[in-house]
Amino acid sequence: MDELTFLWLIFITVVIEAHCKPNSNCSSIGSCNCYEVNGYIHADCSRRLLSVAPLLREDVVSIDFRGNLFHTFPNNLSENIRYLNLAENLINKIEEATNFSNASLQNLINLENLTLSNNKLNVIEKGVVRYTKKLRHLDLSYNVELSLSILENLTYGMRYTDIKVLNLEKVQCTYGLSKELSIHQVRNLSDTALEELNIASNRINVFQFRMLSVLPKTLRKLNVADNVLGVGAYLWTFGQLSSLQILNASFQSSFHNIKDFDFNVYCHENEGYEQVTSLFPLPQGNRITEVKYTDTEFDLVQRNAKNIRFLNLDKYTCLFQNATSQEFGNFSRLMKQLEKECSSYTLIIAITSSLLLVFVTIVMSRIIHRYRWKLRYMYFVARGKNKNQKISSKQTEHSKYHFDAFISYANNDEAFVVGLVKHLEETFRLRLCLHQRDFIPGTDIADNIINAIHISKRTVCILTSHYLKSYWCIYEMNMARMEAVYSRNGSNVLFFVILQKSVVKELPWKWMDLIESKSYMDLAGDGEQDLSVFRTKLAETLLAEEY
Image (cartoon, rainbow, N blue to C red; front, side, top):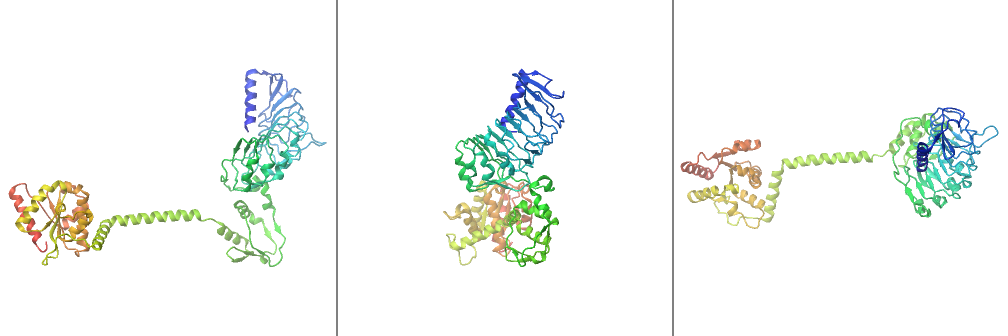
């Protein structure tokens, strides 16, 4: 139902409720409700299960026959009728009057508004509207068996009318073939004063070039929504509709799902595929070099292939695009091969590739995460060798390492560590490396750490709660572990000093195995004697060749 019809119904309803006088004597049956509006009679006969129109008074100008059981256009209607609503009936054709029937529009010379939406229309004879010269609004929407092929018959003689609004929404079967709207179908509209044209939801895929230029210059509103329009030369002709104000071209190329049902019941235009039962033989030796189907046509051939019989089929050959050929004798196998070749695997390939990429990414991430310390160590060692970075002090000829130990500690424990190092260096002549004193200025921290571990005989980790929270402390411990595995042939390089007993509870579980497998010692107490014993024992450990 378009805008004009809706407004008309609203107007009639409002006027009836506000100003109408009931009048039950306008029809031959009592079930119709009649109302008088400004001296005119409106008859409401909707949804009364009528199959034959009742006799109505001559002064009735508006009739509502919606939702009844009319199979043919009602006859013997008064020529005074101006508004006629026959929506939601079972009418299947509109024909010109004959000697045997008056079921036509010929007598309705004053008709202005005609609604025939949601019927079963499939036939409209040529020129049926030419007698309704006052017709301004015609609604044939949602007659899905009608198709756009009736346009030429429907519009023939329409130039003699006052037509302003033509609604042909969804007169094409949803599951039918896509259509081209051609010039000859609409040429009869060129001499009309049409202002609104609705051809939405009709599977139109293209307009014939210059077809739009044939439409009347008075056209203000054009609805071509919900079709399958593509790019074409017709796009450059929209400018010729000089009076056009509203163009609705939304929802193009929307997917009409082809359901599993009998096409011949729903789409009569497809009957040709079902009715083909035999073909004349082609000349012997003929080759089918190219067959082009739309998706719908190919699906139809597949569904109805069991009803198609070819004469002398064994004499035909099908040549594929890849230059291979196959005998036409086994039609079902040939159809399967064509279906396979015509199928698109783009979506499958895209999904498979995406899943494979995600899988590889996850695996690589896990591998990199597992070996992250090794990769870091190997990277910095290789970079250090390429740069030939060295600690500024020269190594002695009697030692392979420049330092006896690299002390790894947190900055919060600096006071204790500095005192410890000073005592060990002065009393036991140990050579110890501290990051705050011995790192080379201007060199990356990571490079300094690797170099210090690499030229130190051992790495001593001073474990406290601050140590466990420091990123660089953890980094130093892991780099020392990598040094032991990959540069010292698995020798014991790491040595742990536990200053706080409570820190053991905070250690990650993977560290417990590391501490149990390596040497460690803890500070037994806070007294001066305990500290002296601790320093002596640590010095002996660092001076030992192996521990």
